[in-house]
Amino acid sequence: EDFMKKKILVIGSLNMDQSIRLERMPLVGETVMGRDITYQAGGKGANQACAAGRLQAQVRMMGCVGADSFGRTLRNQVEGCGVDGSGIRLIEGCATGMAVIYVDGNGDNSIVVIPGANGECSREYLQQMDEWLCWCDYLLMQMEIPHETVLCAAGRAKELGKTVILNPAPVPDSLPEGLLALTDYVTPNETELEKLTGIPASGRENVRLAAEKLREMGAENVIVTLGEDGAYWLGQQKEGFFPSRKVEAVDTTAAGDCFNGAFAAALAEGMDTEEAIRFANGAASIAVTRKGALDSLPDRRETEVAVREI
Ligand code: RIB
Image (cartoon, rainbow, N blue to C red; front, top):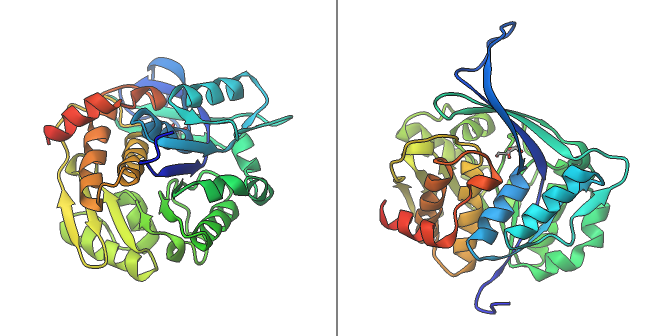
């Protein structure tokens, strides 16, 4: 263990991603031909944990998979990224989470998630794993596990004085009451920001207004990921837009996850919020140039090069 580095706990989903490449998305009632299909490790929780792990952060992950071959593969892959996955539960009689992902010719995606075992990530499990919550300095979560678990974990983490980072994806119609007030950083993309605030989040001025609304709703810091336009941060005293590195996008799957994992990794190393956003932008710019979720995540060396190119 590197005692200089702070510790990150990710509580979240693990999915087997069935990824279909096609020229353009089918319309309702339409049949289109796809190019190919692959099975790869994913899930927002696993992706974020692995993004941090591949960047050499000290990371543990909590989550649930089925006691099937997909489940075991996912746990092994997470551990292969340098994440301690020994607390990941294998649930008997429950299928591993699955995501069906369409990636079009522009690299944009649409995703359908079937949660399966991710739904077993319960409050009881949280209580049994309390030692892991005590262990961490940063808690990083998404919304692909039961929301009451997310709320409960955030509450416990704040009670223990931890820093809570919440990536509100997939975005629910409304977040559990009180959750935003328990977060230090909330990291929506534009669509998620719009749904959470009801303010159309296109254009800089609207992004700013919507982020202000989210802060009024209780979040301490709002970081909006803006795809090729980089990111926007609104804190208590500071704000700013952070450009991205210009790349040719092949597959944007897990770009947001990469951003979140890299951001947490950077904070855990002692970078300030601004430096951490730059670092995360650099990492995410690499993920979009590669296919897949987990498989698209960059390592440390390439990320440092990318950050310098911004
Ligand atoms: O954010 C990308 C991820 O969303 C995919 O890996 C898929 O599993 C879904 O969780």
